[in-house]
Image (cartoon, rainbow, N blue to C red; front, top):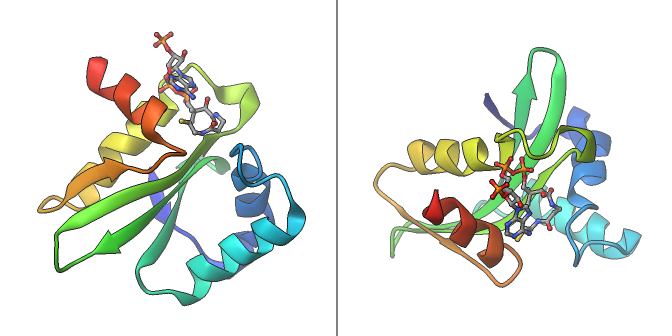
Length: 117
Ligand SMILES: CC(C)(COP(=O)(O)OP(=O)(O)OC[C@H]1O[C@@H](n2cnc3c(N)ncnc32)[C@H](O)[C@@H]1OP(=O)(O)O)[C@@H](O)C(=O)NCCC(=O)NCCS
């Protein structure tokens, strides 16, 4: 299930975000997590299965234009190809029912993949 990011989950969240191709540098990763902690438009969610955190999905919410931009999506490498990524996309859509969910350059390929299935 989707849960909201909390500061106590910072290490786990950073570990998951580091799998994004553009988040390899520690400084960049620290800036990204700080933005999720301080910018009201940036919302980070984690995917919890029983006691394990297996994925992260981060969005930018524009309430005026009713757009949710999928900025980051990552799944723990040992739990990939089990449908978690697609479930996270679906859960984000359900979390923001009156919004349109769109990708950015970093998430476009996987979001396209989700539309196909
Ligand atoms: C992308 C990612 C989140 C998918 O998570 P997942 O839980 O393995 O995804 P699912 O099990 O729901 O879906 C698997 C399908 O997505 C495909 N897929 C995996 N990564 C993909 C990508 N970057 N672009 C397009 N399709 C991708 C798989 O080939 C598989 O296809 P199939 O169903 O035809 O076999 C995961 O691979 C990941 O964390 N990648 C590293 C981070 C990343 O690059 N994120 C941005 C992706 S654009």
